[in-house]
Image (cartoon, rainbow over all chains, first blue to last red; front, side):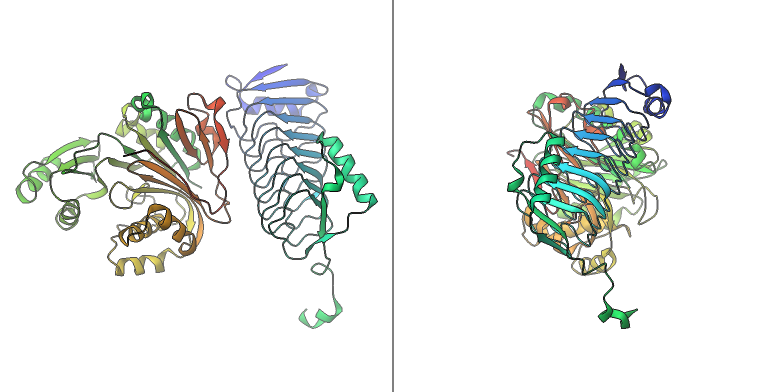
Length: 224
Length: 299
């Protein structure tokens, strides 16, 4: 099934993804030309391939659908996705996977600032590098970065796990490096495998919360 | 919000369609800034002993009267070419002298640009109307910048619209908001920089002018701006031979750059770049925070 956005409207296409008729569908989308809100709120188990670059909020709130972008994505890619798979073959702009709850988000290129901000359970795997303030206040879920991380990674992080293969410019408040043990190697191998990225899990370092910031400390009782 | 676009031609064959290409880019940014629009276009350079200024008037501005006044009091060889509410004026006097005289003697119009190549046109109204009013689609040139404005910092008027000129053949368009512009404006005024409005972006333009007057290069001025300008910004800056892009260190205001063998383009969003010939083969990337990007041709 083909959908050409040069002729058909974005709303028409999104409505199709919301309704039961898209269940099991295999759809190619041509001429996205950087449009906003493409494939937002998909509800059915279907496969969508977008041929070109997309704008803001592509695949946001996704449930079940497998969405592939053969190009770059603008800000807010897969924001608040719930399940399914979102894959971008190029780069993703700011705050991809923000507040995302579940499923798998793969960015084969780079992701810019605030990647996985307030992450709530999605697994995000970036083939390249990530921008500053990524995984800010990330609660749960995993962020795997095969390249480098820019400043203040994991600031105020809760219980999300971060794996970085390259250099980390700086860690945010309460984010620390942690030992990479067997259970972590195992989950990392599984994640890399799901993302179809060919790296050895042993090349990565693990980061997470020092748990000094969000836990109540009796010594601070007088401050409340 | 606001939208900004810039297009710089590397292949001279594209110069004849520069205005049409910039129009297509600007229209895509209309919903980021529907209240006013403007553009700076670099074309038809005048000889070294001449200067051209763009003057912004109203629908009932008497351009004949202005031409006579300039001819009588400043330059008998003046040429005035009217385009809607604006006019491009060519003078054979020293640039600083011309700017000072216009500032002191023509209070019925405002100067939007001065230099050898730059012309700036801007108006309130939907970008589509602004493009049609000035006939941007038929304009030719080497490079151009455009802006669609959604006002957040100051009123919706023609003079608050972008681009703002920053001295000879320089201009700036801005997406964002500055938080220290009032104090900085006072400081720059005390150092002799002129401001026409209370707009924050005009202060950024004035700041660059001030640094350049002190002898800094454009790159040095932009580097200094990173320390002295507080707020959110993506700037596109036009120069006589090229253009430059700068984002603040937090970089929450969007920007996309793209390059082919024929052109370099910047925009708030890829949608604008998708209008350009050969965009599907362009190298497309997001400029890094606090990093200066610039392109320049040999003059």
